Image (cartoon, rainbow, N blue to C red; front, side, top):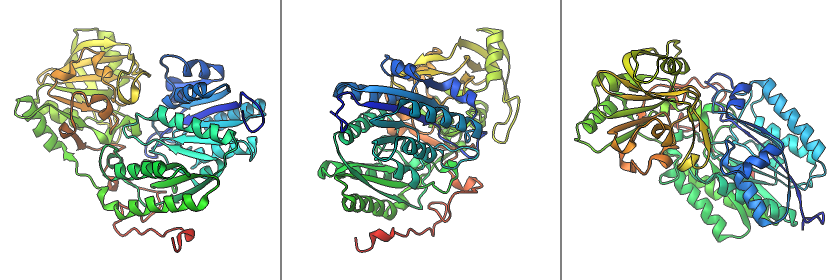
Length: 519
């Protein structure tokens, strides 16, 4: 029974998913409609379906709430787009207006769950996630519990933390714990409904690590996450401890690693002590957030050796062109180098080129033609041509089987598998911008991944959870090729990122919050 005496609490569900890369073209309404724009009761139906295109935490929240007892879901809007530029302001206004109307119509509410990515921004709003949380709080009032979950690649604002009762961030990268974090969010919401009271402590560090150092199997970030989990196990007063790595490509004043600790019984001193301990370790070990990448030349040499059987099969991350971080998925530096070198047994994907994919579909399977990649060039997306044969054509629709996409629908748009003549290099083409982090994106085109000598993925890190059955850690290599998501942060002309910040600025300093004096 909730604090209002109801046995079936009325819970609003909503979310905005976008990882905004300030260097990419703006995100428009069509980007949401092509990936996920779901409203009202359709959210409930999809959340309880076997598979859907919605973010995994929505289904995870429903499952946990259903298992815990009666509740009345009042779903409003789930909007998710591929990572790209800031949302066009009119689109954000439309979403916020729709959510505001839905919340007002749903009153009285007993609670709210916000399932957002946390790294969104808009062309006229640098803190769109904070704006959304503040809007929810303003409409439901101070007494209604609000719980928010975010991706660990989020940029957290003070306004957001102040607007919610509990904040929960992912703890795995690649992200395979979205449903678990949603279940955690549901548990905290049930706690609040039963009369619980939380306090939160928040710290931001002048530390903006490249995303390739934010893995959670091992490394500096993994150690921080393990410390946070230990705090939660060892002290029952700590309801949640979230260390977020941030998303530096948003280029915003709120970028940077953050620590948010939620403590039970209003124990602010407990929350602050835990947050300060995590932040101090993160800052003391900031030098670990440096990672060496292979050059394109080194990667090509390694691929040649693998193709000749002199090295075990390898997988390359074209991390500078990751559609999962706002990259366009169409840079050709690695493609050209591997083809011209004649590397054998290479598969590359997903290369995003709607015009080329359409031409392949028009010509049909078996056709030979001069493939022109990037016939319309841009800063990083340079033209590349090669004689090619169409091996397979697909509609691009599938359901993931492993890792971050397990059980989730994906859509590459009209897709094709090309073989470049002269090298035999195979390229999976897509029409919709998606990162390659799910084996079925290759397998649906007839690619036997286990037989490949070198696989190149347009993905920064999520591919690790999908392809680990083929490539152990010692055969995974990140390549330093140009693009909108290059891990080499010095490559970018930063405008809004607070400086100095480590590792861009070696001399960056952190001043502990005033309340930390004597702790």
